[in-house]
Picture 1 (spheres, one colour):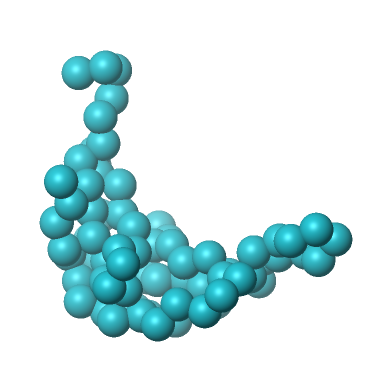
Picture 2 (cartoon, rainbow, N blue to C red):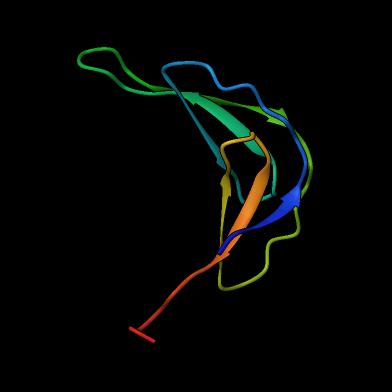
Amino acid sequence: MAEKVAKVGIKRKKGYLYYVDKKGNVVETKMARGKSKGGGGKVIAKPCVKKAKGYLYFIDKKGDVSRARMRRGGK
C-alpha cells in the first residue's frame, strides 16, 4: 500500500517520463521512441522529499509524490 509524501499536482504530457531523483525533486524527461532519442531531463517541481531507506518513490495518478515499502529477499 502506498502513502502520499508530497502534494505536487503534476499534469502529465504524452511521451514524457516522470520520476523522483536522488535529491527528492520531480524530473520530466522525453521518452525514446524508435529512432528519436530521449533524455534531457529537467526539474519541474522541487518538493525536496527526504528519502528513507527501503522505500520506492514514484509519481501517482493524481500527480503527487508517493512511496511504497520495497519487498526484499522474498520476505
